Length: 428
Image (tube, rainbow, N blue to C red; front, side):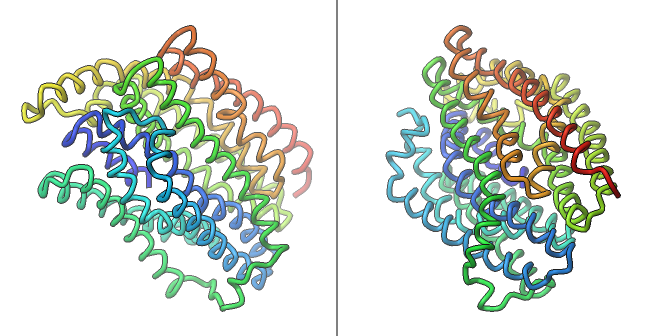
């Protein structure tokens, strides 16, 4: 999925230009938030579903899944409609400058037509993992990534459709993912839904919503953070700085996907065993997840520190076929971005405690601690830092806000995770 989201940025940067990266970057918050509806309902509902399966309550598991489908369709469909109606206003609010506004609108309109499919994919993928079939969940993410690469090459490079080509390639990738997940639940899943499963039940909706709100709040804060970053970077910098953040956010997303993968794999295991009162296994899951994701995070940190320039250059073309303005923008982008990337990744080795700690509380159904810890980095530390530091340090103040927020949020999460493990997991 990370590859699916990063590939558009690579192709538009190399084949259209740096301003196209800026355009995709300002579109990201709204598409990200609507897709997060499915992710939130998927993660929150799957926590309930995992515990129901662990306790042998198959009837409740079916009801939970049916309600997840209904909630995702209703919420994402409504937000997508509103997003299309107010597209001009939203694009400006997200930080689009006149130099790339039309490029952003072109991409935004087409992608929004398929965003409900993406929301359903994000929800369904989490249910597949909760059902204990992670290979199918992996296939559901790999197939659209491959499709997106092929369609990007065809529509942008071969047929020269520009931003429209990038947008339609993304749309088609959503459709591929949705088709695969639909096939899985029709023919491979053990969760055989009936018509009554889709009817919303107040108790089930309340249980799903409570835990979903944790993920939705976290993803919503990330969307707000992206909007804030786009606007701050335009105010203290320029469109090239927005493109820099676009590249950094994609590298961040792609580089950390192994760590996030361990985290997502940890949640259903912790939830299932907690529901079955196997507390020693929950402890083992926490320790194993922190150790392995920590090793991965350290490796990622070393790679970024050494190879920042090559990573950034993937997104930038120096071909003579570009006009003089695009070539100058590309050169400036390559000059500014590598050091910014290093600063953003400076505290990567410690973030695993923050991720696993927040997910533990969500997995065992403790909504308030999960919500507060999930908002610690972006909401309590990063957003205030970005509002303050650029006033003194300009664009550099934006980049150094990331490692400071990582360290502070890790200290807070580590404290509460250690206390909770000693209190909750005292028997086996």
